[in-house]
Image 1: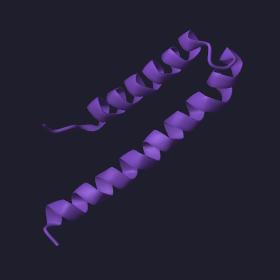
Image 2 (image 1 turned 180 degrees about the horizontal axis):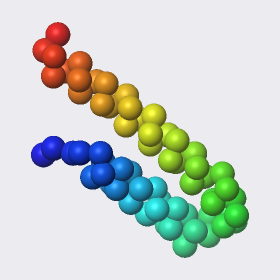
Image 3 (image 1 turned 90 degrees about the horizontal axis):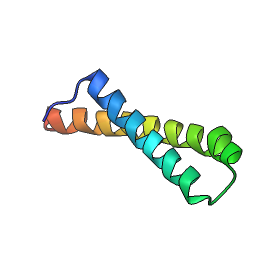
Image 4 (image 1 turned 180 degrees about the vertical axis):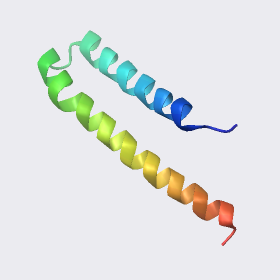
Length: 64
């Protein structure tokens, strides 16, 4: 399965939105806290993990 940029970005956004929705629905913390602190942190962490994963995939594809 090959992912292009729009598919990958869409999957990341869907995961962050799903996680945000679950946290808001569960009532674990205040909605303002989830939206102002947790959601941006999830998005940044996802982007960092995606970048590391892409670089690792490039490394593996080279066969080194």
